[in-house]
Length: 576
Image (cartoon, rainbow, N blue to C red; front, side):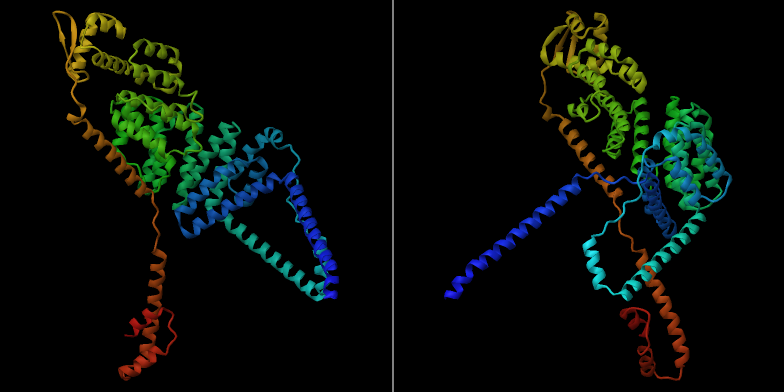
């Protein structure tokens, strides 16, 4: 007992020292983590970073070519958006040297890139460090050297050197292979056209994109179709920036015809949108409507972006042709299909037209549409128009039209807004009809701010004929007499609204089903078919060797003793 009690202080002292050591180690680790967090990230060489991203795109492209899977090609094209921000003259020059074989198109692109030299110096004249170097712990490395013998160290170094050489040989073989892949060359030339367009060298971008289209058309490879559609898009954009869109209409129609004959759905969707955009730029609505009726949009392989563009163009054509219901439905679908985190300009354009079409339908848009992030200032003129229509104030409507006339003409919605004058009058008459049981036409004229009492009489008569208001005109006293208001639930209006909402939900369900991707069992079916063919060949050889003289039990014993390259079920079936 004395010995035990005497050892307690020393034991408690050791426990305290261990706790102190643990606290000190934790504090040191926390300080080191905070120091690493405060340290700025090490700079990365833009050329190395850009080439690494390009290599990742090329690997996806190689996978798409080898597997013939369209989804890999779509993924590679989506990765171009990220790669576009990293493009520079140095990156493109290195990419051309690595992936593009000698050809006249390559020489043309190199010549155009030489003109971007001065602009490029201003953009990338910043110090750039090399790739980050791993820093190993000296203490742990020293301990490892003590434990590791010289022989083991030598073997490890030899193994690492062998792996490095093997990796370099594989890399060189892959690069030689990519030089023979037309998709890699096409992608680099497409990036060159995009870079020239971003640098405002429209003439050079136009020449490169047209040469790229002619180059791709010489091949007969379906994996090049998505890249060809991108080339058509940027070529048309360059021509539009030069103000020569009317000159390429025949080429676009010829490209669309070729895409249809080759069953190139991505090309059909892209070029069809380009033709519609060309028609609408010159207000050729009749030709655009004829094209829409004579063609069909390929919704199977086309991207959501192309579908959103097509729905917007279709809605715009139908709005001009007074088909407001179909136009509003297409514009709603275009707003849903458009990217929600980007494409702000496209969404602004869609909502501007959608608000006008909804007002022409006699409906008032929701206030939340005008308060969306990034759209408040762009939709403010349309908010003033909507407020005037909601109240039925013709004076406020004319004032808003005069103040924002230039903006409406620029948005190409001025002609549709002019049609809205009748909607303002109808809304005002509805309010008057609900408020007054009898009112003189002169008071109606003053409230609606119309030009004369005669015009007011004609307008009121037309609204009564169309069923806008439930009233009649007393021509002797020149008054408008309102009839008793009926209960809306005794009419077919609730049924129509319910049918409209159900149809909307069913349409959304159908769109969701079309957008789903189902698992493919083709690979398993191919493997099972190859397995059966191999087993049949083995069975034929065995039957010849066994011979017809053997009895069935002996033949079955011989067959079951063989090593079959198939599953157990397939083996038992074939033996039987």
